[in-house]
Image 1 (cartoon, one colour):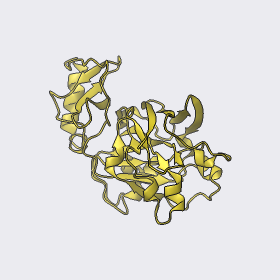
Image 2 (tube, helix red, strand yellow):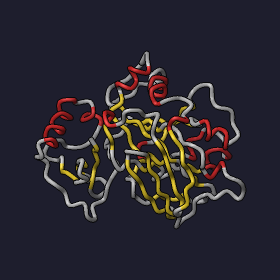
Image 3 (tube, one colour):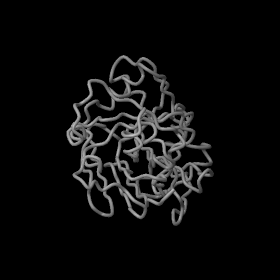
Length: 285
């Protein structure tokens, strides 16, 4: 299933995109797309049954905002330097263990919402990423197979980053990762049954129509299953938690001088095969 949330910010309603591309209203069946829903197999079954029976009313998508496909996110766990080609372009050795950091849940916005370039920023960068959404409480998982059984679905994430804040201002990466609007998510949460192999997905990103990133999850240093298993050794993952699994080569940071960092007026588009496409215009904060 392709689950999403539509409407004005803070007042989104749950919806489903059917196989014919028609937007369907889920608000008569479930209150929202969130962790409790993803953990409730009976509720998900009711959605499937209603969709298969053609019982879901259609929504007029014209002019309707698409919000983040997930409400009530507890935490956004991020994995840094998780693609071989990205490590090479930034001149660092592949890490021996996953690099883990966090984004605050309030950085998450819709896939077509405006992204704000922070005040005094000169190095705002783009990163297309595969987001993993947790569907079952996960702690101390023992195998990669067990890890994948705890995944509810997948989505496109844009891990927008400010490189000066992240790298040159001391401390952890958090200052360059948690600026307002720095995590567009969606358009859909695609349930795990529709993604046969998370290590066989293509990721692309364009800036002002120019292709900048063209990668594949096959290049990941640590697979989706290993990332979920690994993270569960250090923290409990709950239904509705999100893991951004890293970005392939092609970010501004890895390009020759003068590096083409983002400015107000730039337009970024990104997609992952089967998971949909995003588009954001950048404006000054």
